Image 1 (cartoon, one colour):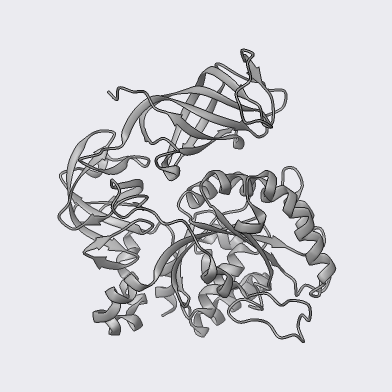
Image 2 (tube, rainbow, N blue to C red):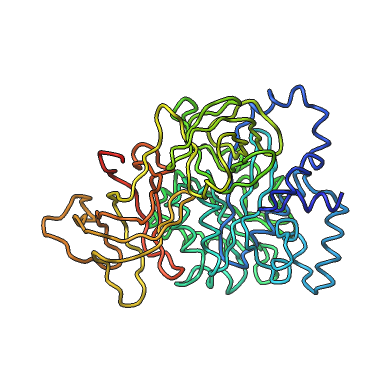
Length: 472
C-alpha cells in the first residue's frame, strides 16, 4: 500500500497515474452509484498558499489522513523516515511532498495533487509551493483553484517573516486574488506551539494585521474571507470541532465545515467549451491535461486546439482517476485526443469549441494595477516582463500606455500618461511574440486575468479589457 500511496500524490508523474486506480480500489465497490454520487457532490479545487514554513504541506497531509485517503501504516513509515532525517515534525508533509528534493529541503516544489471528500464536496488539493524562488509553480496551482486556504504560522516571529515585505504571504494573497481565487480561508496554524498555546491574543493580533491587507488586495473580508485556528500537525479543529478544554474561546467551525460551507460562483456548463492545457503526454494517443473553465465535454466531441486551429476528436475523458463519459466546468481532466500529435501542443494552448473558438492574439488592451516595480524602475512604453495568463507563460512588452485611472473615482484621468509608478492603475496595450489564446475578463474571468513578473517578482496584476476586433 505504501508505494501506491506515493503514486497518488505524485504531481507530475503522469506515467504513474495509470496506477492510481489501485489507490481508489476500496471505492470501486460502489461503481454503479459512483456516477450519481459524483453528480450530487460538487467539485472544487483548493490551493494551499502561504509562507514557506507556515505548514501548508503538513496541513494538506493531515487532511488526507483525516479523510481516510492515507492509512496509518503509511504515516508510520513517513514518521520513521522523518525521524531518520531528524525532521520529526515534518512527517505529515511527506504525504504531500513526494520527491526527494522536497523531503530533504522540507519544501514543496511541484504543485502536489491529492483528492479528498467532505459531506457535500469533492476536493482536489493543489499544494502550492511557498518558497520565493518557486512562485511560478504557485501561479500554476492558483490559476486552477476555486478557493484558497491561506496558511499562516502563529509561531512567534514566523507570522511576521511571512507578512513583512519580501515575505511570501503578501505576494501569494495578491496573486491568488488576480488568478481568480475568490474565496479565502485564512487558517492560523501552529496554535499548539508552546510559544502560542492557543492564545486568543495572538490569534486576534494576526486577524487584525491581516484584515486591512486582505482588503487592499481586493477581498471583501466580511463576505469572502474566513479566519479559523488549527493545528495542522496534531489535526486539531480540522475534521471535527475542538474541545473547549483545548481552546475555550473558539466557537466557530472546524476546517472541514468551513470548506463545506464555502459558496463559489457557478460556471456555465452550457457555455462555449474552454480548457486551457497545462500538460500533455503520449498514452495510446495524445493526452492533454487541464481544468474546464467553461462548457462541457463528451466522449466523441469534435473540438479545436487553439491557437493552431487543429480539429481533434475526443476519444476518452478521465476525471481524477476515473473514466467518465462527460464532464463539466471546474473539473480537472485528462482528455485523450485523436487527430493531433503531442508535439503540436504546448502548455497554454486551449481546447476550445468549434462553433465559438477562443480568440488567438498577439496584442491586447488591459487594465493593470502596478504592485511593486523593481528598484528604481519606471513603467512606460517599452517595459518588458513575463506574462502569466491561465496556463500561458510568454514574454511581453508594453507598447503604449493609454490612460491612467484615478484610484478614488475609478475614472480615467484627463492628462496624457507617459509613465507610472508603484500603486498606479493604468490601461495599456500589451504585445507578445507568439499567438496566445485569451478572453476578455468581462466574458471569461478565468481566461482574462493575468500577472506580469520581472526577474521572478510579481510587478503587476491585470485584466484583459479589449481584444483586436479582427482575429487573424
